[in-house]
Length: 112
Length: 119
Image (cartoon, rainbow over all chains, first blue to last red; front, side):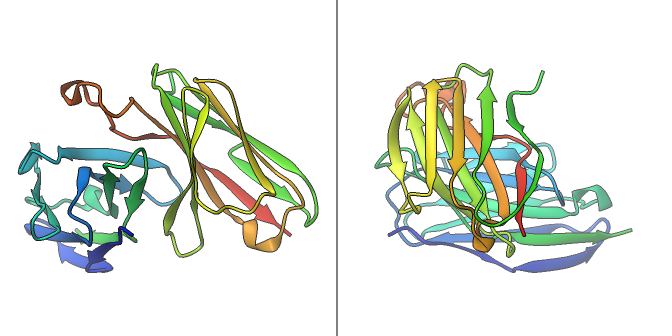
């Protein structure tokens, strides 16, 4: 059974700092991995999707990496801004069908 | 134009009542989902439908009954509501697995959520 863990659970950094959010999963037979952002009281916004055959994806100040063999993904945020404050969720898509398993998220607070 | 829309956004009701949440997507996706996010913010899949067929049922109590009249709609009906049903329910959709991933297949697109409070 796939389990997804995100570390740290919460993170507070000063503005401008580069930071890394970690995601680990127990079953390496994945279809894809997706990083989401959730603002308080809002829905989820997809940030990056990495297919199982890919190693990384980049969008603006965000870079996500995937290492299936070790069951890890990282989300790198460069030059963090207060507007980046949100909960970041890692979601692993399984090959067996349409089930995507979410981690518990990392709550990020970027101080101005 | 909202890609995945859910109604209502807020729902407050008494224990024992029956309620429904509706979801519609205009993305032409083949697959739709219901997720539940509890008070600890943990997001857990409940159901998945692909082209109106139930694909995933994650041991959800049978008080919860999803219905997909067509592939653009997936509604969730809940009977005999209990306190523990209080949560935010998210609808999502994705393109069918197996289609060209270059087109963004399997990117999950979420609705804004429906916050259910059972008193």
